[in-house]
Image 1: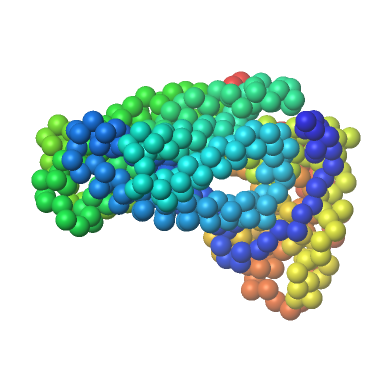
Image 2: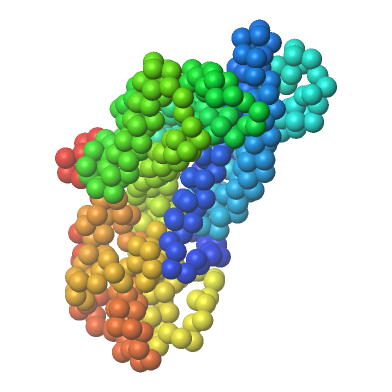
Length: 487
């Protein structure tokens, strides 16, 4: 295994794609939410089909086999096809948007990712074998294939969960970057694994209710009986608060503070996820399991849509609570090294970049450089591209022109210099005073409508003030004072 310090021994530049007014995080976030929802449907679907195959074998449900044949065609069409396409798209967008982060994770966990891939291959093989030959097999062989499919799908979740949970809580890996298993079996591994398992079961059950209502040749009572069987899986939703609170207790105090009111956006999305889950849980437990009500296709679809909303809110929070890092205390959200931040001899550190420049060695030219009025604005565009563009646009979503629109010139300089103190979920500015001034002028030029001429600024007193503010801010993350001891 390549040691972390070797992997990030220098500043690494990559050609990054530009999505125009769409924030890069919106692209990968939206795609990721859709992929996660489909993947969880596939995992829960495997477990649900094992249950219905057992019902068919024991003659507990006369229409179990008919349900299986119809449900599995939907599962293959959606999870195998759409899931596979979005999975590839996730890799494609990840390497365009955050190549350093994904590269470090592959470098550290390549054998575990390869193990996950073997289970994925088993999942696909068993799934297609069932799809092709299920009608020609006896019940025991059908159940065997479904067990292989369900177990392989869940084991795929097992490996991926550890790698994703590692980003927020690296555990002992943070102290010893060769401690693979300490990073994998990290503090949030088990709460997130169990939470996701329940989520998979609920999503699959809700999707099954939609399928049951679309199946031809069934009487209302037949549909009702199949739906009530699905409700047995749905009631596991009562465990979600336990696993959710467990996860909340295991994450760092500053991350927990974002959810508990420190960031209104994250608090709002967390409440959306909780509210949607409560609505689904209430209907599943009281309406279906206790009162044994019938659920029609429209209501089932609405509940499935609520489940998608809960997934979206939960995934947004999971990504958001890592800020200002993509890998806690190791990489900032803009892929600048957070470790050894105060060591000016450590290439890639904040202190090093403040001395030598963050884009002085960037080999990639600015696109359409001729449209910028002077070299200072071109430099500001390179700084924006390297340090800001992962989370911001200039004019579109989360645009700097809007966020800083009420600041005057000196406020821009001071606020960017002390960025991690202004907003503690932001990484520190990692460049020279000259680069910071170039970024300020780039923002101002954009805010003024991008005029054809723009006078460059080179006042030594201004650069000295910027350096003073950078020194005052320091190179460390901006921990809230109330949480500084727990960082």
